Length: 390
Image (cartoon, rainbow, N blue to C red; front, top):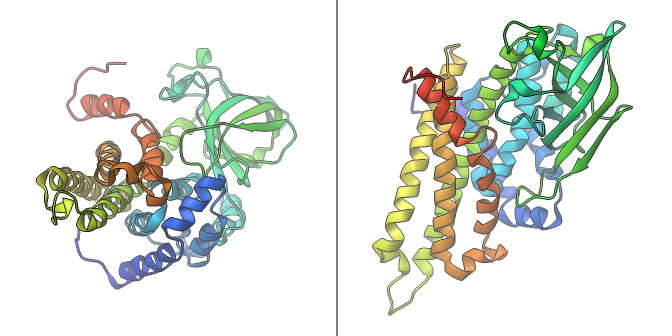
């Protein structure tokens, strides 16, 4: 790993900083209040080439890696968007870009990757179900053979940005669980149009991340064409893990940026706010220490995430690092946003000062896209060689 930036990486950071500053805290507060999708900043991100950082050059991207994507996301999110903005990178460069780049046919790549890079196409992934959250192998959505294609039936829940999506990456069983020798068999990935007969959705009211809707999605005998299969029939679970582990990296980048932003807002306030005499509250260790601790935890998460990204870029295993980084970052972001609210006192509870939004949005990521408990299960099993506990 290198801890200095190449000229190309510095240019990415500078570009992201310029866009992030243009769409700062007030922009995100307004969108949050109106539950409005951040279309303006996303289009500018695409126009600047940041959506296509990891897309191969022959399809209109920059042909760079996950490391460069992390640098851009951290910079953009720390300017005001916080963890919500990183979700847009999950939906598009990950659910769309990584899945297509790694598993798509040449025809699929030629058609959809340039549209992803330009912002013409938006993506969402339909994985989670009412009875299959952490246990993705328990999904019941089923695609039965119908001529040279399939008919899709089932229900998904907590699917991000469905109304804005052009395409849905749908995870479904194509062979019943009772008919396979291993639970990981019989799962396939499909990339289908969001607007299609038999596909409907209903938005879920929620605590935070108001700029990106979450929906229940219903498939009622939805026709899926043969060229919409993404990857290998019945072997999609192994391919799905690659998508999910890169999702962890993107999530962590947004959480690290959230912690950075929350600490910065709290520090700025603590330097100005004076009580009990003429000393700023930032001179008290009771204020300093929690903010310093939050900063330390966020920096540790940042470093582990950079390691995960570097391993991914070099083609080495990175699952443990990606999961560990996400675990630490989720706690660091919650610690930082909570302590920022505490530092601001009553003003921390006011939307005017932004940190309450950062707290509401970041709270999601202690259980999504993977829960802390499942990360601990993963580390215990794969790093400590303990028996599987679930």
